[in-house]
Length: 184
Image (cartoon, rainbow, N blue to C red; front, top):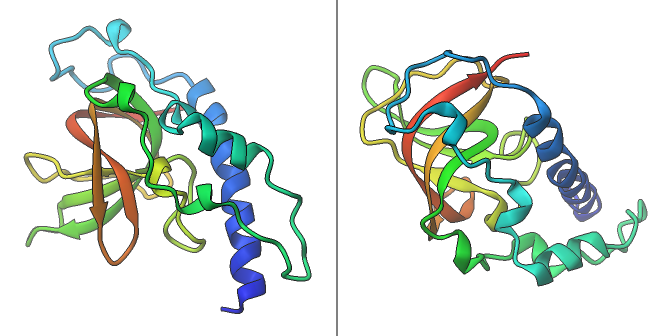
């Protein structure tokens, strides 16, 4: 892929990363879709917005990013590869909306490792979001997922934890309590 297209896709990913979380968060989860395993009633789960995971300087850099230059002369802000985290988010228990990208499976094709991403298609056909907009999840027990285009509320505890693999780098991890399918 040429540098021009790489930059264009990075800009598109950024736009989606800044817009999609609000769209996903606005959808109402199905009440009673799955039993709670975290001991909290569903109404007590704190909703975590993706923008809360961005340090103020990264958010500002992304908001001030110049318009896309289709000639390939655009400089991407450092925030597009930032591994900086928000210290106050380490240990926060709640639920995050997003899409799951499986990265490892057991012998029964159940997911043993995955990324939570803020918008559909991240890490598949376009460059991944910034590391501080990716959440790595290694469930205690393998899970069976639905379709890749399904949106989920992912319940658990956020940790500031750098994870690097061949697919992407994430600046956060999540101790998974449960997954809840978001249905329209």
